[in-house]
Image (cartoon, rainbow, N blue to C red; front, side, top):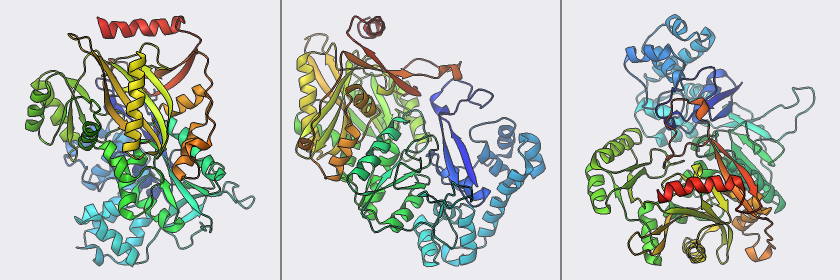
Length: 591
């Protein structure tokens, strides 16, 4: 049974009507394949990258019946969880059907999940669970994390008991010929059955991790990266294996990779594929922040990461450690602090001086980032982050008012650094890079500023021992009193960025192929003859979907809101389209 579930970014649409209706509001979708409805349903929730590990049983259940019943009356992004909550609290299936108009067959299937959880209450520790019942739980989609939560134990204990009981995933071939002919497509999904239809070859393999469902902050640009990465792996003579759950992508076409696992980008699923296939390593640089966040799991499991090491990727992602590196290299950066409480955040803001940029660490698309100007705004913002991301820390950065922003994408092979492109943003620093129009090459920055950015990129790429791609964002700030221009490094992303495909297409250079071969170590940058072809300028133009949310706040800021982008070519800076963009920029910077 195949299931598709929508992926929303309603948290980005403050002030808008967030209930689904006749007008589509989803930004993407995930797909799962299971042997039964319950398994498929649970896996679709594991595919969403919303900190859910299945349909409930993950410490996020609602407990007030009144709130749940009120929510059931209207379609919502989380209604499937509220249905489960209602049934768990004893609300009859007939009542849930009356409120939701969901077909009773589906409701009875979800009710069966509730019954399984009640049956699990008989056992005190994982080792007490009979193997037959544990297998049945896995066959209806329960993750080890869900079972662990229900039993209030660590996930490791559930996993150990499961493996000791001989309960492992098996993989089934998707029959793309509807049984009319023998299917030979290398397209698999997992379940808990007896026969395993995925037969590992004896070839050397490299696995590519995809980016999951499209959403604001991470979209189809990373699918472009994954596809070209897979083609480069095959070109180098390795077997290319793809893991992803996004039905909208080319990377999940069964004829792109040598082998496709249509699975959630979820550690429990990935770990068992690794044990079966035993690849030479995994590429996480091409799948956006989703893949990058799993790098630590690969590192702890002893799985080689192709390209930049986990320690160096983590160094770039950890703001405190990265700022220490910048200080060591003599590279300017905005003043900052890291807070774990609201009081610490206030102390840091008073030291850094308002306005400050507040953001959680390790986030995607600038989620919950805000520019605040006083203690009250800071306290509200920090408490909101701790409420919605309780295990996170808060970064407090000096906000450089009226600064220009620019970014560089580059490739490093450990020795040489190649600058793919230097882009200048139309909008000033403080507006998320994904929401800014960017001009390639730069058009108003001084030659000295551009050379400084290039120098900083070379120094950082070598210091981080980058093997593959890196994106660095800069703020160019001119002091009001002295008139001195200074280049600051805002952040570095040790992976493909959303601008990597833009640069590759603008310059007509197969940069993802080059970067992947560099990651694998099969070639060095000096082995490639790179010729850029661009007459005039290319502009990256963000696309917004505000018509889907007519009441939403349309003002741009550090939290990304665009849902896509397009490329626009101009011959020179006299182009009317560009002149209008530049006029708007002047209003931002100088008024």
